[in-house]
Image 1: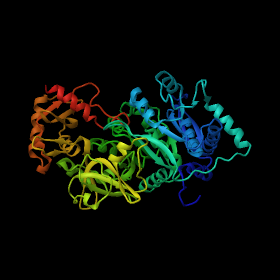
Image 2 (image 1 turned 120 degrees about the vertical axis):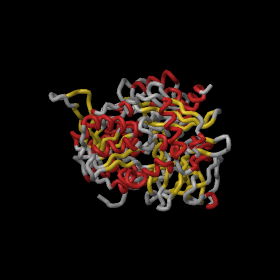
Image 3 (image 1 turned 45 degrees about the horizontal axis):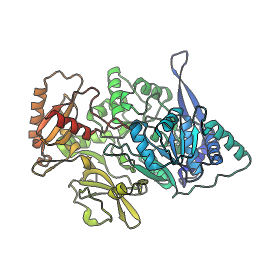
Image 4 (image 1 turned 90 degrees about the vertical axis):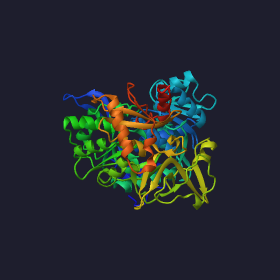
Length: 558
């Protein structure tokens, strides 16, 4: 296999299939169990996945879904999702991927923005499309993954047509690195979801950065609990073990459905949101679980609590670690600091209000900390940059940085800064750079809280101080008309009176340094005892919905 990375993401699966054709690409769980009570798995090799995606690519062209077509893709994690995605990449078809957890209204809004002319989905997705008018006026071609193919084609029919074309010697043509590869929607945790334009070179840069960051080699085994991350596996030459779980509700996962396949298949890499890692970590601590095969656990979506890190370290071997890469749908990865370094070097400062250290930028990414403003910035100037040690907005540029949102000029203008031929992406996060060049994350720009004296408080750096209290599971700083307010979710086993906890939290606020945190400005402490806990994002179940909490807090203070 060539040492040079493929030019496009469409070339990555064929490259791996040529080098390891009989290696298992996917272990897919069925609902059946064997005589020992273990879940049965279906295996698909790299050769089989590559050949199936070839048939799909040719078949899509046969039914009129051709190069440049935007196609909504609504298929659950499965061999079909992998084969369809790479088939679409090979065909030059642009998959539009939207989290189903956005709800019916959110899905309709995203589809209206993306304006797909094809719709590929499972029967329940097609039923919603027909009943609710998704894509009405734009969708011309439909493919059913399962079901009868009403008003369109079944996936089986598409594959049969593609097989006939390939047998006749038809060539698909090549895909260029600058072609649009996909439209991926953000989780919408700080506003309406936005469709991020990915080009093939963006995906290639991401894959190579992830490979280098984690020293991933072909033949490793991955258990991804977030569907989009699973799609990196074939490009990295990893075997995917799909877990038996609802990917839209990671916090509610049955820990046994994660631990059992890790132990059974000797999984070396696992991806999970902080919410999932919290659920599995608590179970693992209680049951004395050991996971010696894991080399790395990759966490993304929100900062990890110290207790979650500690629980996972007890399950992993001393050589393994938890890695929380910093980034976003618009740019990933940006930076990373292994959790063993976080615990030994930076966490003490986090608990004193410095924010969460996300590490030094990865080699291909340049990071600047710029002045905080909510206004668009059309053109880059070095005068935007603030001195090291000062909190500002985090901005990044590099080959993994996307250039625009699809059909959304307003949000593109707010997030992108032109610098000659390069593009800076404004992460929408605030943070600072330390004396070692590491970046510290202090919260979302949109979540910053202003006091009556026009002072600014940042959420994450403030909350991590209060989270040191043994009875606090997590906290959230929000702004209300009555002043800065801290909403608190307590540990389940807490028995002490809320008045006692409140008094101790006020003492914490009074003691903390530096005074620039202004924790003494917190006017109200509210116990959030609503069933289910804080509102969180639909993708990772970890990003706190502070806008909803602010409404709740405002109502409580009336």
